[in-house]
Length: 312
Image (cartoon, rainbow, N blue to C red):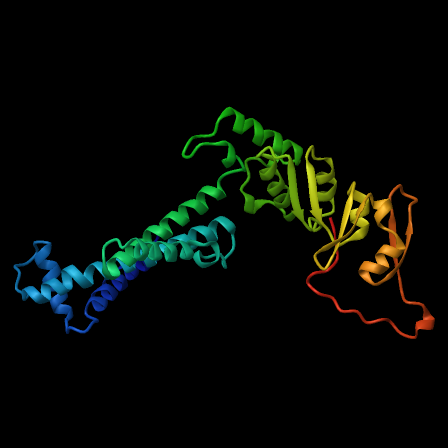
């Protein structure tokens, strides 16, 4: 460890001890830092007990446990944040984003509902245990490749697990990336990794939402040996890669069928409110959207909502 690191570590520890000592003095009853030292020294056998029993009880039995537990909880959250930022290579990843603080809240609420113990110490302990459990779950999920539904709790991977993962990697073209960390992969490789994780569960269906950031991903999805349901807004991609389409508008089904049956100029104008030409020369419908006719005078203004028509 370098001198700089030693200085930072030493300075941090000194600041931590001073903060704990000051925190113990805060409260309705006046307690000085000298009282804190006298109580701690007496209980650690470093000095004879000279502090009044009432003050000693306030320091050692009430304030010190709460302060130490709060420090441990804070340190735990800091470590969780640092670990997650390192794993994800994202300085914005923190316990609040990834659910650790929610686990702490759940643990504190559970203590209240179960009536376990009493006071702030029990609440802090519940929060600490809840955060610890949720952090463990995040780490567990981040290190599995989709085989949880096929494994018993706390059991090592089996030969069947390894075979399923190997096959999933082969299907998604990631065999040569098996030894790499997720954060070292490109964007397209990360998307294929997510599909590989799903395939490792040996599903019968996949449900994908707008997998169009990388067009080669649709080629991959079309070649998979499972039924895939995809939410798409690009009609040309839907016509090119989907066997059947279900068109939605305002959350309701409008029509269903093969791309050739569904994607007609009349249907496109009815659902999307635009005029289009549809040709079938490549073997699937190709949609070319048209500007409004000149005789209409100007482009028609249409509003767009979050519930846009969707081809599935």
